[in-house]
Image 1 (cartoon, rainbow, N blue to C red):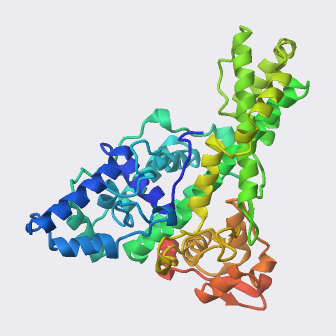
Image 2: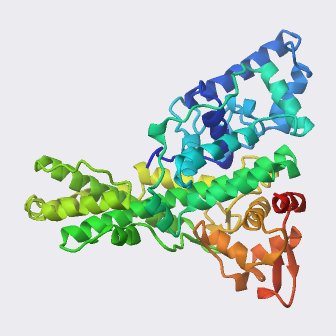
Image 3: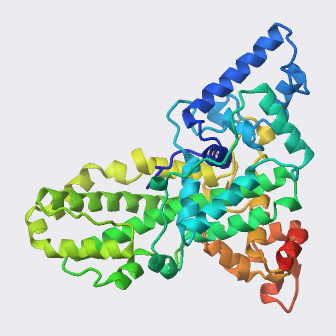
Length: 486
């Protein structure tokens, strides 16, 4: 799994995406020092009563108020005593000094995860590159953006150390597409749905302000990223199931059998209104166990002098590996690999139970990406409205349950109705959520908090002739009309 996910909030994902797609020269580790440097320069200008830099339109105090008031993003409760600059990633230039996953120099590149999702969810490299280029254009600030976004991009460049905003080359070694047979044969893959939703969001940009559009992008990014990582965990566990069955004398007989085993047809990662983290923890734990088993077989084959030189990134490659294991099954059994794996699992029970290391990082990624932002300042507790998980109660120990925030509801309803040109059954929304592994019974929507959100936002029309008595309405009629004309 590359890059290996760690802590990230929705705003970290967007800021890291800016840096990956348009700031080739900016590393993740350079972001926190750039924020501290900007703070020091502002303080120095205030102390020495110096004028603002050329090209700016605000004074020192006013720009400081923008950074620490208008644009400031709330800190977590455990960050209240830490001094660092954290702002909403509204325009690209703000990502140069804010939005790093860590305050140290070894932050993980969260933007690379989004890039891999685009490639994996696209049919071929050409369509992936086209979508990546369209996303770069949408993230850029041009004459069609609102006045505040254009002013902010210019003002930030005047106060900071501007870097050239241009489409960064995509290293082909860091992206991959599924084979055509696998892509056509996969029935459930969050990355495929993410690619469709990303196209729908890009088309709708002109129907709203920059802040509104960025909020919708954040909401879809956070759900798609966690669903994609969970899907990868699931696929790893299924690959190990193929190999362990082969070790036992069974296993898939051909590529089609392998494809049916490795790629899930339908999953339930989360249930709407239910607790979420335990299910995600089970998938992460399964991934770690599978990774241990897969590596043990590959290393054992190499030690025996029968290394496997093929790939394991396609059903064809996994089928060949299974056949290779089948051909050397007795030699593997003589090494005592099954007993060795049992011993290692016992020794590393804490790591396999996601209490440390990679598993703990995966849970932290899911919790902070999906969960509603817990703020150090209580007055700002309503800042995050694009969440997928929220606390069931006010206690710090209250469980996290699946419950969409209003911005997430807007984003997903828009994506579910993209290209439809009019109202559709509420069933489309439940199908759309299922594409990301969230199960919700359409019969329950009318009675749960999702139905309440839809009514409050004016996104449903109660009709006795429709399924469940509710019809979904497009949230951005202008963009839907443009879709229909196109």
